[in-house]
Length: 119
Picture (cartoon, rainbow, N blue to C red):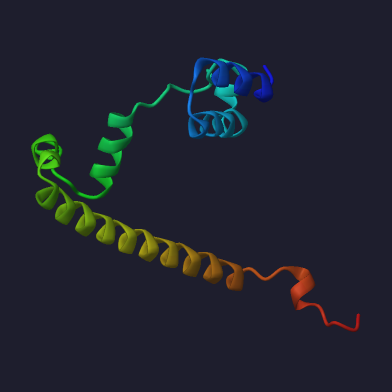
């Protein structure tokens, strides 16, 4: 289906312009919308699954999250704190991994690196 044909149909149905533009961008960016079917290589994730996975990463209490989400001040504090600690832990893990890779590369030099440049 061509995007221009989609615009014509949406214009005929009375959709506002921003809906038509958003839909055409989604069609271009997401293959499942363009082809009319989602990819069957993995299970389709829903919003709650992704949210719970992120809350586990943030060390957030999964039993109280729905009650806290109703009250924005009670929700924002723990989420921001958890995001900061998660990001710090992630960056620290990346630095450790990078240092280990550098140490391994220095222990096992390649033959080209040890050869004299004029030979």
